[in-house]
Length: 464
Image 1 (spheres, rainbow, N blue to C red):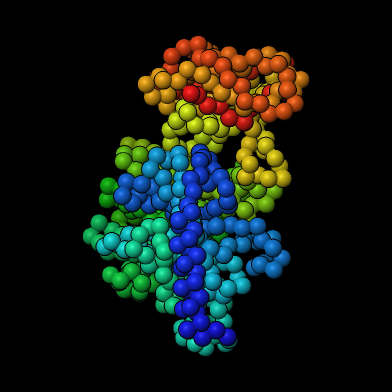
Image 2: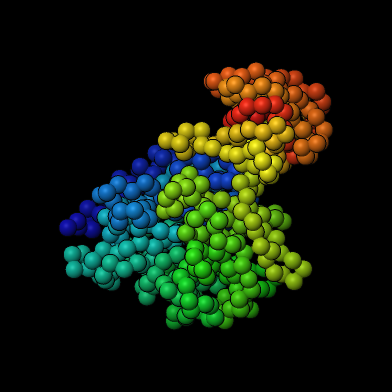
């Protein structure tokens, strides 16, 4: 059994490791999913200093010695940020199960977190299974191995975060969500078969009221992952709920953070491709509301390995949330001189177009667009050509025995023609370069149309 001194020494070593990771942070380019080099889930998005920060959980591919086989496996957290909704920076690991004194370090149960800023400090809330008090008598207040919720504190959103030695007292459950009202009062919400809420003390580490069971939510079907926000005096709570087979995102409203709440409708339907879970959050950047969630893009055969996504959110004139249809295109404007992944499409032809993994054995290599019919097309919206400096288009493609042309058009499949690339057939990936036939300025919707026979695969397109 480790002493508290051993634990504190371990925390120092882990903090140094975090600092190193922060120094070597990297950019992750993407639309949906937002993060392209690791598995992420349960995103909480916050606007901090004009940037979007996302605090997700971190799925890993579980080994037989980790946690529960064939189940969720999570040992740490990363934080990501973006100033343009297209380029996401990974700031490295901010907290792991090995840094938290009260967490069972063999449980791999660092599930859905939340984070928020108050008075210049950043508070990170996370659930996990607690150690068994019978073998950890130096940690009073931790009982059993059920889920508790803890808090870690940092001076910056990127961390490093220092965890409290004990979880928050009188809070048992998962999926913490913190909301700060306009009067400065902070609330903690969580789930455990039902939804619970309580006021937080100004120190953001202790409850400042009794625990309320929130009313009125469905009694049947699993519900979890509450997320509360305010708009024009109305309090909205989004949450996943298994109404039929898998989780869909519903929402309810109230005139008070602690309810009672009135069911309003469905924000996002069940996944049509079998991801059993979903988990929402909402953020407003400038004048646009954004909706964050997850799907198992990189793991279509195992829905416990997920990836975070985002799409735009809109309200009608009565303040009701309009239903969101998940997209691959997602949010943000792509620069024309970057590698534009057409497989993250806005729309495509009904026949003759599909996406495949570039390498099924290595999903993080990404996807490719495959054209198989004459006239097949794919559309990718919002590409920024700026002042029209670009004069050439580069395509990375594999054409094998195909013959024909790839046409680049603006607006739709019959829109203005800006370039043609001849297809001559190649069994290897090649980068082709051709001149633009027209000057292109500003933000445009880009369409690639295939005219020919045989299969053509496109990895990306770029302009220079």
